[in-house]
Length: 135
Image: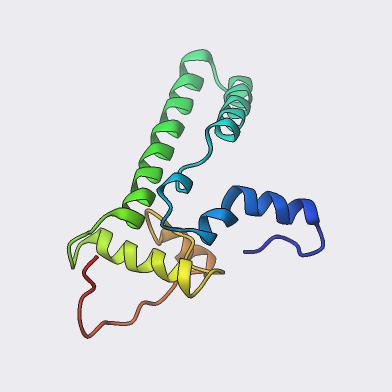
């Protein structure tokens, strides 16, 4: 998925949000979402959910969303800097995510799961390796 090549603003926005991470994928300072934009997005979601849910439910929705995002980000960080054991779920995900970064930028978007890639037809097919990778 690429930004429209006709919009300089969209190209800049895409690069600022995600492109820099692809430029330097092993820079640990660029793996998590920047705090200031994250705060703006979180505040916006907070206000929007307050329109649709009562106080207690809306706080649970926010808490669940933030927890889900933190778990997602921790998995993403581990896929870049961890050393999962062969035959583990994370070993497969790390191979999958590396293919997204280094060979197939327009597919393999799943970080914590390949589920949505299968749904949207963007799944990668990893070949069997003769030897395992030692991270």
